[in-house]
Image (tube, rainbow, N blue to C red; front, side, top):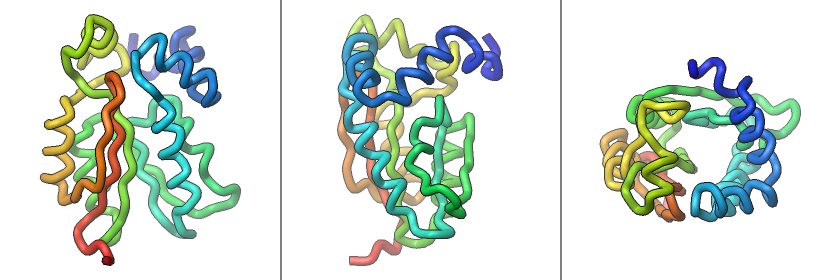
Length: 167
């Protein structure tokens, strides 16, 4: 299935519908993915704190539920990339010194049969998917300092900032 067709498909429409509903998303996250998506929804609260004229980086876009945290009428920019390493480098480039990047990403690994079956890089809508150490390396090579990382099933939630963070 072409990436352009994914969100128009039955699976893509279903995914979008449950990801836009945190309670349902958490139940399906546990049943299907084997992880707690609660941290994903909590991380969206950071979007509400972006100052006017700020930059929000959403990569990859997925169904875009994080964008529901935008203030109506706000003036922010959104960048979407297929290449996560390139997206992180671009995020570091556009963020001001001390800028914050809050992210959620599926990670590759062999933690369970479910994860090996569901997360297949280069197939479906996943594109390039890294392991946790790879993602942490991509963040570092892009110039980010990792403030925290939490893994739940096949998902990695991270918080990072660019150099120049105020103390």
